[in-house]
Length: 467
Image (cartoon, rainbow, N blue to C red; front, side, top):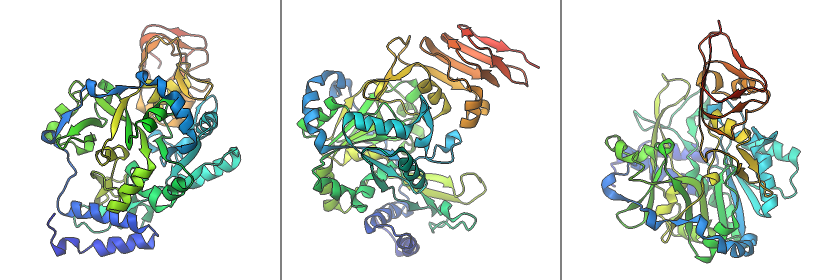
């Protein structure tokens, strides 16, 4: 990577800015590594010519490893469950930690996660962001869990002005000068905070990491046993891609033989057709990751940091102001570390281990009777469901934000056990004890709200013609 001195004239300004914020030297060095890539024109793109698809024959199925459960139980004392807890859920209209949203049976993500950890008798850690840390701490002080989770903070990177590659400045709201560097930052955050060293000193070798909004991602003893007994340094849970997953990252194998994760932002525009071909690239990353912490420490000590494939994300400085200056946000994906771990593997898991709540439509499914909790407080699919999958499409204007959503389902979610797909168009309010079956479209063509009355069974399309 050939760099002219004038291309790095702003680097000292970035370093000073990060030092003033108190960021660890490892974090600063990591940013410098990516910044040099940005100023030299590197895009972080991964081309199809450099990768080959992963075949089904290469992937072990979690259904075939049940005999490892006993080994997993023995390894529990050496394991920890880490939840990525840095999201605010702004796409759903939330203004505080997303994990504090009531998701099912009146309980928040955080409450359910605490119960899951207690049921599995597993240590718990939360990686918070600067935006979610205070809220999460306050919630924990009220919940008073028997075993308080270990907390550490995600780092932050300065935004880069696209025009000059200088540090972004925004006096109106200086917080907007910074961006979270993606969940790939977890490795640096663990190391820089001292958490990695602390865990290893306490005999913790295996970490299971997942998103806090994915209640299906519990610590499975069979998976832990399979991971520990085979001495894998890194294991990613994957699932078969469906038409709903064409935008998400897929797994492939690099021409050097190692597994690799390619996100949509890393795909050249003229290759998006192949990227979205679910028959070619069959598996997606669930973001449920297993890490050997001893191996992780050795990589960091050898290379000084975990240098993941870069995602150069073009944005406006103020996301709510399209006229604000254009910037680059440097981000990385946690699963991208799979290419750095020699001997890393992937394993196919059932759909119920991946049901994150990213939109209000996801929340409707989880709140409904399609899902319940096992004795271990794991989210499980109701055995009486008509279909393992469901497609829900809610009118964004009326259901896109949580307050609007809750107003329209004030008496609870309808029964969706026998529902395969639900589309709602227009302003429709649902009273209690409503059942929806099959493939249904509920539409309000009028300007005033429509109401589905209590006890209604909807098994065919319903259209309202209100004034």
